[in-house]
Amino acid sequence: MSFSSRRRNYLLTPHRRDGLIEWMKSMLMHSFVLDALDTTAADTFSHFEMLIDEHRLMTDKLQSEMNSNSALHVSSSNLFVQSRLKQLVPSVGTFYTRLPLRKAFEAYNAKYGVTKRRHICISFNEIRHILNLAQILAMIHPTAGQVQIERIGIPPRPPPALSEGSKSEVNEQSNGQHDTSIGYETPVMFTRKELTNVLETPRATWALDDNIATPDLSPTPLREYMGRDHRSDSLAIDENLCLTTYPLPGPKLLCFDGDQTLYSDGANFDKNQKLAKYLYLLLKHGVTIAVVTAAGYEYQTMKYELRLSGLLTYFMEKGLEVDDLERFYIFGGECNYLLRVSRNNRRNAVLSLYCSSGSAFQIKLGKDYKLHAVREDGPGGWIVSTKYFAEAPGNWPQSEITRILDKAEASFQSSLSDQNMRARIIRKKRSVGLIPKEDEKLPREALDEAVLRIQTELDEAKVVLPFCAFNGGRDAWVDVGNKRVGVQVLQSYLGIPPEETLHIGDQFLNTGNDFAARSICPCVWITSPDETTYILKSILRLAGVPLMSLVHSLDEKAGGYGREDDNTGEEGKKVVDFTEMERRLSGMKMDVFTGEIIPNKSI
Image (cartoon, rainbow, N blue to C red):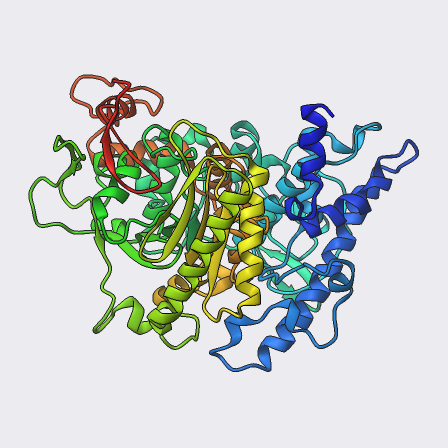
């Protein structure tokens, strides 16, 4: 058997597949035969919407019958009478928002011409992208009601403004479910050129009148957009587009995985200028951002700062204000160590790192840009204020924590011996890891076997505390707690409901640690930091943020910066030099498994 055949067959095993996407893929196969109609695939996505709406209705009814403390634990598995979708896809979970799948598919098809193919049917990744787009549309333009209106095709190019004569056309184009792309169909979200015309039209809000969706074209109190030819770069500030008093439409809490989502696996955030810019803009617009990561260095803040040094430096150079800065959180160890960026009274904060040889490295972060542990106990403590739900970390007895870690360590030891793995086991305060020896690589089959084995053993042992056993790509871990608890703690602590939370991660299979977040909030499934960058770019554009004008204006207000793609600016202007940041960090490295700072032998 060739390597490619082996790889393909391995990906078909149940633990490497997603039930909902695989079912959608099988239902769409008939849309790609030679005699398929142009609208067949879009109609199929409409049927998916209907099944999801029915499933949500039954879940919401069950949720309303439960008390407020248990409402967050409602899942499709609690349904007394299963929905049709649950019968077709037994592994399907909870949907916290409606999903405009037809609109998302039409947008994707307009760009990539999926329905023009006759030999290759729609793929797993294409359906994943469509689901991601539908989730973004649903959160940024939620519906005020469920009104079905005749759907027509996507216009080739949206007009520059909504005239009186075009109101009826817009009314026909919208299905009354989601105000997508500010009154127009959604394919225009994909390129800057196509988006320009949409983002610069007046915002159309929708109201229900006698079961007919009609656009309300009255001036919005939030903002209006003018043609780019008639505005200056500083007009964004003049029009109060730098939102600090108005909420950004869309998610209020954005949670991110770390490795392979914000930065490459095992690397640091030290070179992604575009992603740093979009995170900065989201913070400026009132969105709370949390990095919910499996990396558990307890409250050794300097190690988290090292992993995010490039991002923190970007915030410093851009002059991010304190109120915005304090909406940036890190949840380490899945849900065990909560930190935030907050004020530091020292004039120049310096990140000092000491390696095992005694050598010291220092990175200047500047004033007020350091991480601090969030208070656990006492008034306002995050552990105290979240004790009301049973699985909160404040309710975990130490004896149960020790029991989980003991069983995990014994199971990993068995896997290491049975599969002759060139690995070692490390144990931390609330996690156990199976990591490769130096310069070794563990096969993913062996890691998956170790993870599924420990999951089965802990389930059979009737462990009462939440845990997460996952394949990290290069290693395998068992953590006490999981990302469902982590996101739920943030929702409770910050007062943000599940439907206004969005988790972005890369491990949503049942051997990944993002899988648990599916049961507590909407999710977006990405595979690389580049996809994360594109998702954030889409969120900002669909929310009506004119990216280029706004960034330039904010730069001028903060003191002036060069072009975003340059590392050298004009005289008297400051730029964020990611190349220099990478060079300064190259003299050391941190063992991401143990957290030990060691000299870089390759330098």
